[in-house]
Image 1: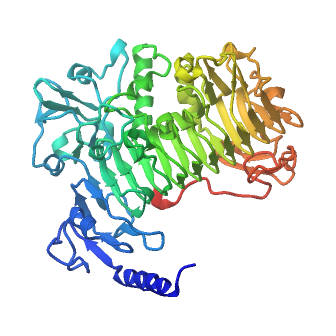
Image 2: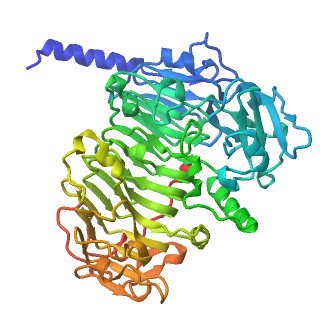
Image 3: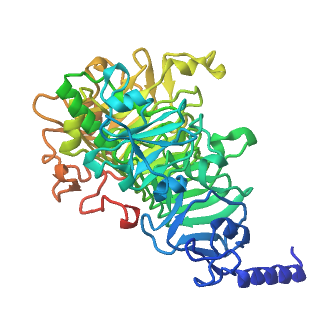
Length: 604
């Protein structure tokens, strides 16, 4: 029992701390670090000064401008009195934390046109940048000048008709701009050239981040309303726990928010991070693919499967997604992740524990919306919209046991526009709504020496997929990799709506589905000549019907997944117990329920 005197002292200290909490101001254009920071007129000039002066409970308002700083915050708030850094207004490109070269961004350093080469410009630079943005257009990183000059990749494959290349021998950066995105003279644009990228794309370190939160243990820090622009890797690096990143924009960032579980030399594993209402994009990655597909067709060049994976590796790789190195009890909700290669990659989710991914909009994603990582456990994926994505969900461990699981996927909507269907068709590769793969590399891990290769069983409650609506007309329910001689067990699909061409690609029509459980699903084939998901996916008490209308879906082609009042999907599934937000109604929405399939305007 705490003595009364000690209780009084603690209360007094808390009151004094609360009284000292204040509103502070930073103004990079008009401020002065010699001022007190207490008002807009006496604002500090730099974030570097603010992070040293801030105290628990302070709200630091950052006014409009471009801050060419690498911010390192080591102070800590408390659960009752967090430290807040907030933009004076939540608006894209209002308060910018930039890793770009200031002289290039401001136009002080000029670009030189290269003789006899249309739209090619050069500039002296002492490093190979991880990213180059032209305004908000993310230029494609070509491996060398010859490739940039011809917009051609290895094997004669056409590349995007814009990009940059760095020549280390002459220490020169070259760019070519696409007329489709504006004026092609970089001297008339805002060019944002980042620092050098890390040689290890899975390593989150201080030098790679625009803003690092480095306190030991819980920091209780909130970052709200910032635009993070062209860091070497991440907009935010959270070594500390209990960090919130809200209403932020990530432009030219290889990843938005990184935790320290990817830099595990010190044993850290960042916990309790919230990423909400943010915007992450690699625009125009999706348009680049459309452009390349059209050029390949005109040149009668056959594109190899997954040719766009040339964007993946190295210090300029695009495959990391919104977050990296997710630790324990992270929440990713209400974000807009669009025009990107991945939404949440294998490196994002690799060792996550109790991660919750909810109410996000993933759109125009070239590979995977949500990967379940190597060893993710307790992963919940719910109430997301996934639109125009090649592989919405991937379960593909590559690091041996323990396999990822348990995982719950529910109340999500997957939709495809006519534009995306046409693109995937032109790629001559049938996508899968769920991609399941177990590469042989898993058995090269020491813990796998005595593990049988013929059966892969998800631990615990397994992967449970229920009450979702999947409108995936360009592909099949499943696509597989390295599963020809293996049975996968403990995958369960209940009360889902699924519109697709078939259950699996033709090469896997004899696949052994006996280790999976299907019940109460409503399935629809795409077209009269397609088999559709069929009776196997419909399962016990399921409904295999001829059309979406017959299942009582309102208008899938225009994104309306509501059930009509007389829908046979209403109460047409199986009863599910001990599953969060489960329903005997088939699909993501209950009869009469409507749900906005977008995120808040602030996140766009």
